[in-house]
Image 1 (cartoon, rainbow, N blue to C red):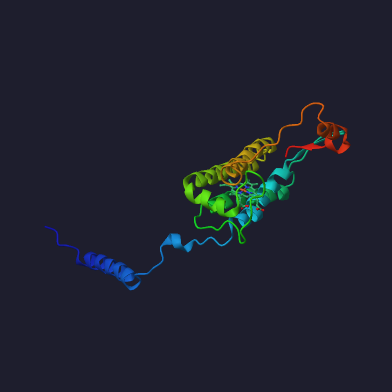
Image 2 (cartoon, rainbow, N blue to C red; image 1 turned 45 degrees about the vertical axis):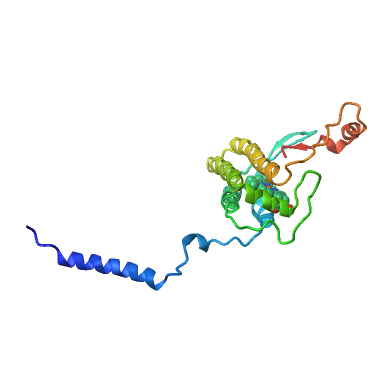
Length: 211
Ligand code: HEC
């Protein structure tokens, strides 16, 4: 019979003792999750990261129709592609930040913005009561932003425009569920409506953009 390898046993026992000693000495050792602490409010996250990054990506591939024709903007230089890529990364990771629990809605409570919209306290309740759905919307946002990143890496402006349309829906679907769930959509002006007449006779109304 082979003799047991005492050195190996000694080393292993030592390592085990060191490990257990470590946790025994640090019973309050912080768990990994508690290292994450939301600081910005949801409103600040929307303004500074989500909306700001989405806007610059949309703007980068904007299509403007004027009387003189259609102007299709797109990133061209390496620097421009790098800029739009940076915003896609911000958007992807901002979506992850949305899923971090315990984030306040706003530094100062705000009232409902319009008929059918929720105030900040109601938004907080709505999220707390539907956390799984809220996180699912955040995941949808992240995955949509990833398709944008792929389009950017492929330097494919058409794919970026398509993904931009999906992004718009990803934003809106969460807003509809958690921000203005009972919104009242004004009726579309009918033919002969003086408001429509005004728009049609206003020369600036010929300017239209994708967003
Ligand atoms: C997971 C849900 C969710 C997604 C996805 C989401 N939002 Fe929001 N957003 C909210 C909620 C809830 C509010 C209302 C509370 C507030 O104002 O922060 C809000 C508010 C906002 C506001 C108003 C901020 C202010 O000044 O009060 C803007 C602008 C905004 N979102 C832009 C966007 C854009 C652009 C996207 C997509 C690129 C997006 N959001 C995606 C949940 C979401």
